[in-house]
Length: 354
Ligand code: PMP
Image 1: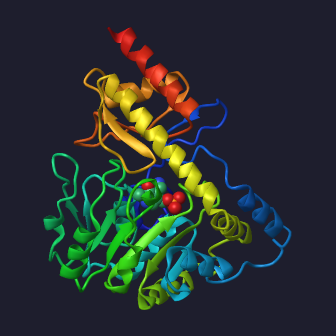
Image 2: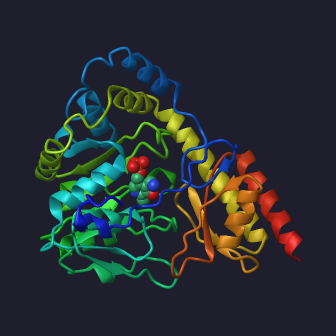
Image 3: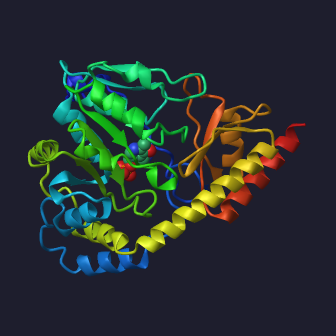
């Protein structure tokens, strides 16, 4: 750290993303990316848009904002389009949380929430999940804090019901309630229709997972018009051209090919159920997942050990060295071949231990 670095920021621990290796070819099951390439329509659209890269891109998400609105069943005024959903989350912390309006989220959830809170100097309460890793809705009733819930949750893959989300939103009318639906297309139920009833609800989604566009960096939030206007206030005070021509066009192309996305999600879900059964056969405890990953632990091998041994065989998964979950690993669901390679490698590792 240089001696010029802002003292206030020097205490912040940045988010640690999963490894993005270069050089050796790994089977990558560590960052919840899609095993499938983007839709051909998305690639075509992005290539076409590249011809005009000498020009600044459209503001406010351009045509994409309208297409997202139509796809999720709201008006364009209810949509803000962002550079990945991480940007939406960051701007939500900036816009609605402060020293006097703290945040609250689970102890085991997306690791970026605490980082965003820290960089905006927002105090936060950490609310432990139950012993089975569920959110206990009662813990969020009437707490007078800005609430962040990933649904399905990461890294567990477990969900919370829409009726519980409604109760939480109703009981905290002076705060926002954010539902991060990064993984909703793999078996969750979206809370988007609830924004009509609850003006404090913000739903965040991404093109990175089900739509195979993690590299394009496109996300969005859905909420009441006034909340969206506030978020655009932050965007216009940070980087009005927050989305490139090519990433917006790729996202537009993905939305024009809904059958491709649906079919890929069905394959991921089938591969997830197959992987779950195979891991259970090997004695693993697998948390029932509604996402494109599974969270699992083995009585025979610790999480860190398994992560390291799999890495040696050329397979990357994710291990979190954190209280309560250090025995677990998070495994992204890839192609059937990737998952069979993983199961084969785990069998060998466990056999070699006996
Ligand atoms: N929310 C959750 C729960 C995630 O796991 C991720 C991806 N790691 C994100 C949001 C951010 O995804 P992106 O910025 O690629 O849209």
